[in-house]
Length: 196
View (cartoon, one colour):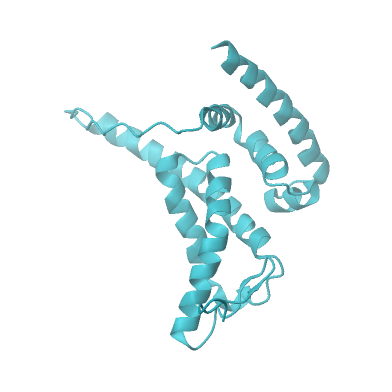
């Protein structure tokens, strides 16, 4: 007890102890602690990998659903943040694949409709308070996904090239080459943003 509050023991980068506890209150506290500790990092990674704001929360929830489904395996995970990062990269990859399918289906549906209805006007979302974040996200979204993924994972998330190679399933030298190309592309696009 610290200041009258119960403290949930956390192991460094492993997440909370008790994810598979038989006691429901302990298990709930452990899952809440895991979510609170890692949600922001997972959300930031998902956004930096190019998922639009409207879909990012769904992808983050998918990551934690996978974690919940694999709760028994989590006790053996050595680095929870790295494990969640791997799940997030795979979830984003699945999202991109299904987004292409949904776009194709939407185009086919629109082509077959005789009458089109005017689009529903949604209220504008409030602008981000940080102008630089908006510009960086714009530049990242303009980059090819292969280059953006490497740039985000190495330069923003601090992953080693070997770890990124394992996550993306490509050789380490390919990761290094993509990083160099990604930095060049980012600089070129950034200069284009400054001119605009």
